[in-house]
Image (cartoon, rainbow, N blue to C red):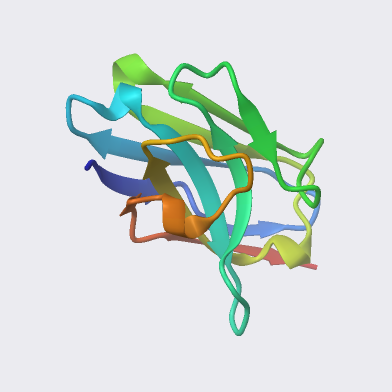
Length: 124
């Protein structure tokens, strides 16, 4: 498993942008698929985006397509989530997670390593 630490969250106005980072420790990080999830108060954790270990496969939730971009730099053991055109409904704690396998239907249970999360708040 790998250890993950998110950063980059904060308070932003609607229409603004934030860039989240997920720094991983462990020599094998480049062999893990990595995803971003989020959880708003009173709601279940939901999938946001994921990227395969080599970056060749990427997936997004419909709610963020065209606004969010996931990328990774394996040399830096870091995954990024660029969030543009933010909306108040994007407000949540954002978590980075790593998975050993790429399963067609995304399930948080398939991700064995999780960060502690970073708060993103979008004001209207």
